[in-house]
Figure 1 (cartoon, rainbow, N blue to C red):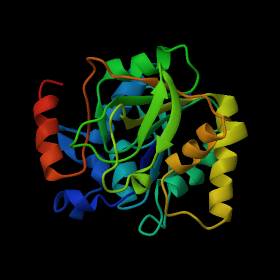
Figure 2: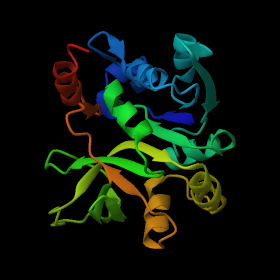
Figure 3: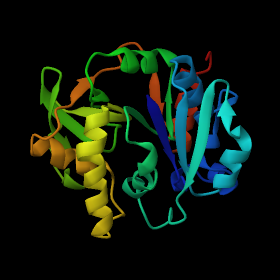
Figure 4: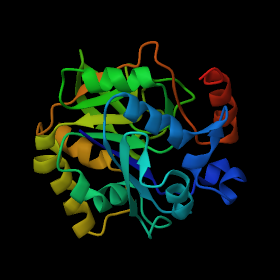
Length: 245
């Protein structure tokens, strides 16, 4: 099993902290967000991780080098981080994704138990999601039981959108080798070939689910804490949530 962490963006909403360091190196209770992620991967027995960097990417590679405990690290650079989105960052790492893959965004805090829950789950293609709250922002999913019927990107959630029954993507996924090889990577290829690179990779997932080419399950964190850090207010809340970590 391989992991990929997308950490190329500038983190504008977290300024001034991100004026001098990439968002993934932001400290929460004394540890960087990226360190939390690497600790969770390593504790679960994953041995290969690709980190896509961009903004101040050299600071990331200099901080962690080629390994973290038993986890081998490689770096892929997105030089166009200012004009592209995470779909392009993921596409740049494509040669490392032709296997069972854990996909993580580099501003996501979670504990080791959530990673273990995801890795050990029997389902092959999983999106970690949580019950939608008014303070959340981003892609949502809808489904029946544990199956996902629809991905709805933020751009499709117009004024007055009805969020009843929706779940928010946590931005933590598991994909099977066949899904990556036969569906997800070809979808990324198509968007890049069309020069449609300033878009979220969930656009591909939304199409695959709508066309019934991908059968994804949703997994709720339960009592496993998580937090997406976008703003100083988020950081303060994350510090409180993870103060004993």
